[in-house]
Amino acid sequence: MPTLTPEEWTAIKISLRIAALATILALPPGIAIAWVLARKRFWGKSLLDGLVHLPLVMPPVVTGYLLLIWLGRRSPVGSFLADTFGIVLSFRWTGAAVACAVMGFPLLVRAARLSFEAIDPRLEQAAATLGANWFWRFFTVTLPLALPGIIAGMVLCFAKALGEFGATITFVSNIPGETQTISAAIYTYTQIPNADAQAARLVVIAIVIALIALVASEWLARRAGARAYGYE
Image 1 (cartoon, rainbow, N blue to C red):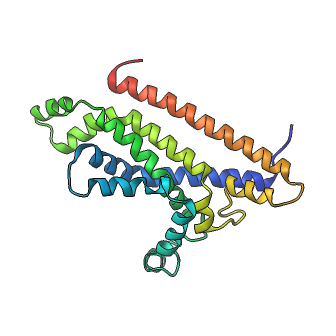
Image 2 (image 1 turned 180 degrees about the vertical axis):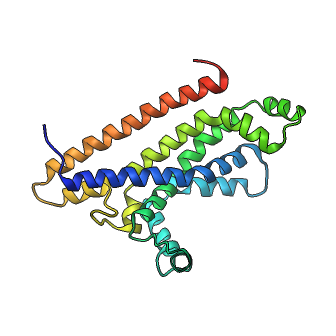
Image 3 (image 1 turned 90 degrees about the vertical axis):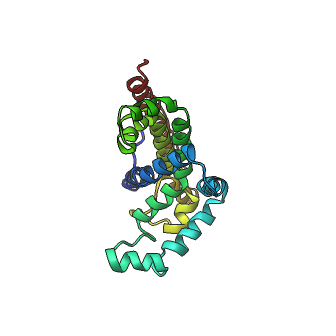
């Protein structure tokens, strides 16, 4: 049975860490924007919807380049974060997480929005007639009922972050031990003679991790749906 090299293990750990942080970063704004798109009517809603889904259709390298311009060390936002909070994103694994969060954000929002739209408004109205304010209704009625879709969106965001390449390598480059993810490592091995075995091992591992994530998401969504709607 082939064993992984330390460099391959490092790439796997970095990918999992980046994907986890990217999902956490995308979750709060994803839920908020999904709820706004599902429940509110306002001028510019189509524009907001388009901007949310723009990373899905825009070349990933363009997204990475824009992140480099906006959040790079010498940009106004990047220099503010570095000088004020000591946060440097470009060419760091945290920057890779930001890039992955941006790329996975549309998938999370889409799944959560569909879940919010599927909720019967009469349930929230019933809670309102019992005196529950908006905050209480959202966290005790709306959010639990939308949880299956939110979980599905989180897993899609996580899986997208695991496989992200274009935006990440443009924004934070391909630095071994810092920003070299599974995808970047596979790309590196394809450029090295006689490194096909290393690339093949990482391809298999990427597929296995993605499958585990999808199966886990289905199981979690079923559990959440059973608790929210009372079915098995």
